[in-house]
Every structure is written in structure tokens, then in C-alpha cells.
Length: 205
Image (cartoon, rainbow, N blue to C red; front, side, top):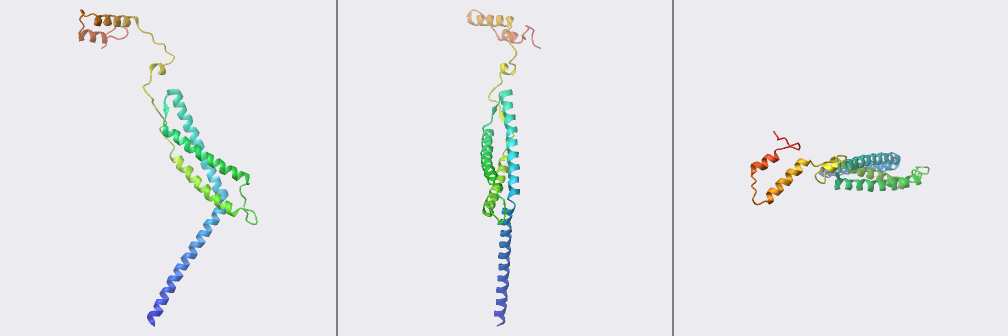
């Protein structure tokens, strides 16, 4: 008899505990869901700021990359273009979301509680889009451009006209003739002597 009473007490205690947890979880869930409805304006504003931030970042990166491309002849990395596409995709979705928001006057929660379901759905969507914006922003590229090849002197100094020195041209012609003449001798010392002269005919030290 005593064992049956103890068993009953244990069962009741477990039941009360489980029931209490279920009730608490239900209440917490209801509060969270109502919070989505009630805080729609706040979540939309947070999304708007995230969208503005990522658009600003894209403009800065794009201007910087194009400046390096135009001024130094560098090429923009493919992953930078990929990031631009990700930003454009997000901004397009955000603009559609914002347009619907404005068309419906922000889905006001007027009596008798109109737009409850719509606000709940859009509040969750705004939170998800804000998270997406933060993920894309974290992927913002740092290195933007790279050299496509060696920089030519013509590109580095486009306003300078280079002229061949007459003395050097004559020397090159003499060497060419000597190499073509089978009877001529040309040793490494002669070559070193010629290469050791600078553009003005002076020997290098």
C-alpha cells in the first residue's frame, strides 16, 4: 500500500513537472511569436540599415578597384566580381521587400489587429535578410586587383619619348657585322668591355 502511494506521488510529481515545462515553453513561444508581430517596424529598420551599409561598402570597393584598374592597369579579381553579384542580388531582394512595405503603408497593426499574420511573416523574413546581409558583408574582399603582366615603360611613363643613342646604334651595327664576318674574331673580353659601358660611352664601375 505504501509503495503504491509513493509510486503515485512520483508519477504526480513527474506529471506536474512536465506539465509546467510544457506550459512555460508554450508561453515563451507565444511571447516570441507575438514579438515578431509587434516588433515588425524595428526589424524592418534594422534591415534597412544593414542594406545601406552593404551598398556603401560595395560603392567603396567598386570605386577603389576601378581606380586601381584605370590608373595602374591592374585587373580586378574574379572573386571581387562575384562579391559584387552577391551584393546586387541581396539589394534587389531588399528593394522588392521595401517596395511592398511602402505600398502597404508598413502593414500597420490597427484595431482590430489587422495584418497580424502578414507582420509575423515579414518580420521573420526581415530578420533572415538582415542575417544574409551580414554574411555577405563579412565576405567583403580586401585584395581587389592584380597585375596582368609586367608593366611596360611605355605605360609607366606614357609622356616620355625615348630616343636611341647614335653611339649605341653604331656599336650594335659593328658587333652585328663582326658576328656575320667569318674571318673576324670576337672574344668574351670584347663583349664584356662593350657591355660595361653605359649609355654615354663610360665604363661602369
